[in-house]
Image (cartoon, rainbow, N blue to C red; front, side, top):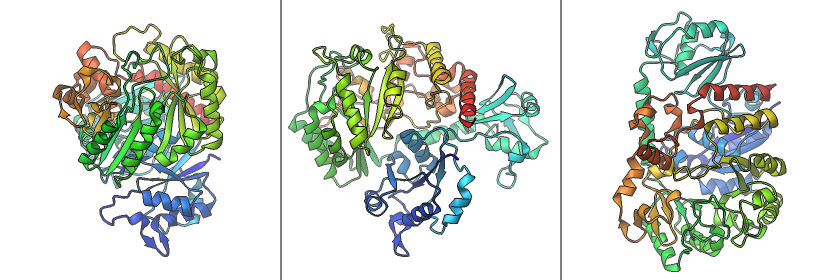
Length: 577
């Protein structure tokens, strides 16, 4: 039987009953009732509570140590954010195994009993890979007529039907639903054209098509709803999301790094105080920080000093770090919990010499053995620190990802290994090692077919969550207090839009990132089948695309969607079979 992972989402900022999830009911907090019922049912492999509430986190650590806590983002903890946002965020963070089942439990249902959860054992409340995957047979189609209007609908232009090897498949990007059809249903649906008014005699089928947004009142109306939700998220003011570079210095000299040639600048005490004052001026409800550089651990004392001042602000605070891993020894990693650093990203570009020829110290000395020892120590002795090992892949190290995955991919539960294709960040095309779209697809197919590895690369990513650069409160701070919108711009004087103590100095840079190259205003995007799920891609790349008439911001599957969906189908079949 697949493992059941229970997720209980709670927020601190309830408007109806403030802090309701921690209100005492029958001698214990409200959230404890559902936790205890799940525990007593003996059905859970893991129980998680997703929260932004420090008080709830402390209570669970003390009273329910078997329960794990996921710190949900500020964006998923607003009173307007649908619960699916924190679910997607959680799945992306913990990366459940392909056969795991995720069960969403509500803290506001205190009378749910252990027997209820036992009866639920075989029910899937939420498929972890995407929102809707069913077979289109009548016995699986429940009657939705009571809740869905069955007025005349049109066939959505966001539908895709295709067949491979006598399998009939149907995808819709408005709902991100993917279903396998019988041949009769496939032949029937193939008759319809985008925008055509459709009335289906089989009302159960019609109801299901409406539910998956294959039949809609108006495609443009559906896009306007998505656009409104996107715009609303751009101006969420409760959370301040910072990337802080305490230094631009780095102990490595990687040939592909965009920081190559940056000045060796370190943050001073004076700038540190200005950064804290700058943050206080926003009066944020929550603060999140990503420590970046250069190599941020070269300035670990600065990180500790700033963190102490951030925590004294009296607001929820959490952090992550992007580091080359050379200085991330066990002693340092053990201090992260006290600094509210819950996750780290480390890069390994291969094993042994394969890594060392690409990521070496300034003097040319190797780095792999030191980083590997550090990761082993974290896996064995610092299990609460989540580490993502990024393997940068290009034509020169085509086999390195597999080597790293075999070494560390399944060794420690808190360490995962993820592939990342090297990209030509500045758009100039001067990196001959960079794979093209077809080469990347071939590589992903090879990972699956030869090694049975898949990292949710085939299925469209239902993001609906843009990069923080689109929000005025998403800010990158350099070591001299200079302000950027994107970390790709760090140390580029023409991309500085202000300073922590001097206000805005370059409005064009700021407003370009906030508004330029908006996918909802781009004719190419508006004509694209994947607009509802894409969110436009990286804004940095989108601006380059707009200026240079390229399309580097587009997802890999935009040009051959059916091929990617077929590979996803094969993945799902292999996992089930």
